Structure formats: C-alpha cells, structure tokens
Length: 512
Image (tube, rainbow, N blue to C red):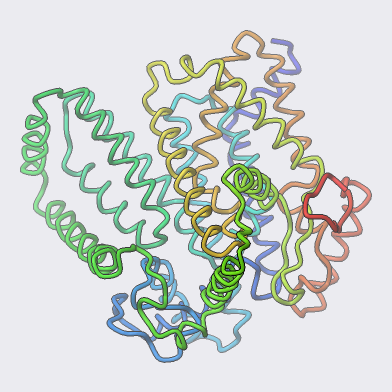
C-alpha cells in the first residue's frame, strides 16, 4: 500500500477517529438542540405532550383515557408508550426546577442525544463483531451521522431515539445466543435478556415487533439446524444454566421477565384479542368525536371518507403497487436527506443538498450490484451478517406493506418518512460494506481513495450542514444570540457548500 494511503488508512481505522465521530455527532446534534425552535417537525410536541400527561401517573398502565388527552389519540390502548413514560421522570425533575418550557425541552433533547450516542457505541460493537474491519466500521458510522435526518431527529424529543440503542442491544444479544446455540452451551441469562429487552422494546414503538419476530424465527432456524431432532437437549441446557445462576441473578431475571411479559400482554396482546390489531384505530377505542381531537386520525378519517365518496362516483384514484413502490423508494430517500421545519413555517420542506444525496444513491446502487454478485462470499461462514440482513429486510418489507395498506385506505402517500429506515440502515450498510470489502479485497489503495471521496461528498452538506444551509430565522428559537450564531454559520458555509436550489415546485425533484 502506498505510504500516503497507508497513513490515511491508519487514521480512519484508529480509536481516535472513532472518538472524533462520536464527538462530532454530539456537536452537530447539540447545535440543533439548543437552536431549533420548539416544536420540531417529527412529532416533538406530540411526545412532549404525552410525557407531561404521564408525569401525573405513577404507573405506565393507564386504565382509562386521561383527562385532556384526546389530542394524542387513545392513550390507554396505545402500544407505544414506554418512551414517554420513562421520559416523564426527567421531565418531573426539570419541571420542578424550572417552569420555563424551552429549558425543559432542551434538557429532554440532550437526553435524547445521549440515547443515540449509546446506540453508536453499541452499533460499533455489533458491526465489528460481524467481521467488518475497523476502517469500514468507522466510515459506516460517520456516513450515518452525516445523514441530515440523523442529527435533526436525535436533537428532538422522539421515541425513535430510544429504539435505536434497544435494537442494537437486541441484535448483540442475538449474536451471543447464536454462539451459544452453535457451541451447544445454552445460557438462560442470554435467552432471558433477549426476551426482556425485546418485549420492552416493542412497548417503546410497536414497529419493533417485525424485528423481534424476525429474530425469533432466525434463532429458531439456527436452533433446529444445530440440534436437529434433539431440541429438547437445548432446553435442558437452559434449565441447567438457570440452576447455576446466583439467587440474585435468578430473581432479577424472573422479575423482569414477568414484568415485561405482563406489560406486553396488557397492551399488545389485549389489543390484538379485543380489537384484532396491535395498534387499533382510535375510533374502535373511543368515540368519533373524541378521536377527532387527534389531528392525524381526523386527517386519515376525512381522507378515507373522501376516497369512498370518489369511488361511489365510479372513479378509483388508487394506483397499483408499481406506482406506489416508485413513490415509496423516492420519498424514503428524499426524506433521509431533506430539511424540514416545524409548524412555525407550516412544516416547510426543502430538498436535499446535491452532493451527499447523490453520493448516497451511487453507493446504494453500486452496493446492490456488488451484493448480487458476491452475496455467497458475503454470507459464507458469517451467520451474523445473515441475521442482520434478513432481520432488516423483513422490517423494511413490513414497513412497505403497512404504508401501502395506509395508501389504499386514504389515497394519501404517507408513512414515507426516511427516519423509519434509521433502525436498520446501519445493519444493512454493514452487509453492503462487507460486499465492497470482498469486491475490492485486492485493491487496498482504491478502497482508501474511494472512502475519502465518499466522506468528502457527504461532508459537502451532510449532517448539521443541511440544517444550516436550508434553515432561516423561522427555524431558530426566539433568542438573539442563537439567531446571530446561526446566521453567521449560514454566511460562512454558503460559499463552501454546494446548495443547489433551496426551493422546488414539482412533485419530483431532480437536483433543481
């Protein structure tokens, strides 16, 4: 390897560079957290409002709809509530110390940043465990935090920020369970931990359920393949492992198992039995009048009635799956790299900056080609990557089908937010990165040069820089110092970053 590329290689694979990635992420997210007006676009006022409601309850298990909670839907049957309940405790503390809402919001925003920092450490450990090199792992994480939506989402109050570390944690536990199955050394502690974390995660956001189901199916297949007709031996090993645990560990694990299962049954299972849906329609739980106070439900209800009326006149505007798929792929990509303000500017959308968004398309397209060509080598003797890939694809498939079902119900292209892909982007990119490594295994210099080019393209407007380049005073909190600082940043970056056109006037954006 050439001495210069060798130096770059050593730098990008160093622990110091890993630390820089985390610190840079904290910097960009903290910048947004202290400067972005409340509420930000991704339902921040929704989550904050529910947090305040839970701050008046000791138990997370609501037995009836709280007073004044209709604007947030049927909370008593909402399967995604654990984040708001847990966040209610730091809120109780900060609200006791100060009545100022902006201070309360910023305090909670920094907790959310901390949650995503934890996820970066967990995902680093996860990706390294799959056999991906240090340099590729660092590049993957840096590219991830340079996706514009990542720091913007991390810097606001949102349950996705808790889901990220929980997903990384369950995947790490799953890899440990696989090792124990393959070595015929089952562990009660690992299996119980997987069930506990998985069940609690599903109560943070119910869309985690496809990931949990995929993990259970995958592990079951690994179990069958390794134990064949003697699966009973595995469970006898679990029992033996349980007996070897200390009384303290046994007590803690059993209590957490009972608690997580009880909470899961109380909400998800009861919903499924009573309403035939884990996340039942608000109108099945409360009256139509009460549900109308919940904006998203009212919008969908009006859209559905409009669609029914249109069909009654002999016209069906619903397009087929090919049309929907094209729209879904486009808007998922678009909304990973776009910029969006909150209600203070009527949720104004601005298109992605050209270079990072274009680079992402090239990387993805090339990654697909490489994957098709080298998939056997990628997964050869690497059950870890196979787990990450199959789990992620299953989640994406369910996400797509759920969106299509919603489209057929309302004739509205909704549920196409790129942030919904964040839970599986890192596992999927790890698989693609392994493909790149296989394809370029004999060309180390080229790998380093390509890595540098990609990083430069992403730095040309990725991450915080999209927020700075696209925002204006309406995005900022009403503070003179903050606005001066953001305006200075906008002026400094304007001649450096290739912005493209800030506005677009067509349904499809082509790097205007």
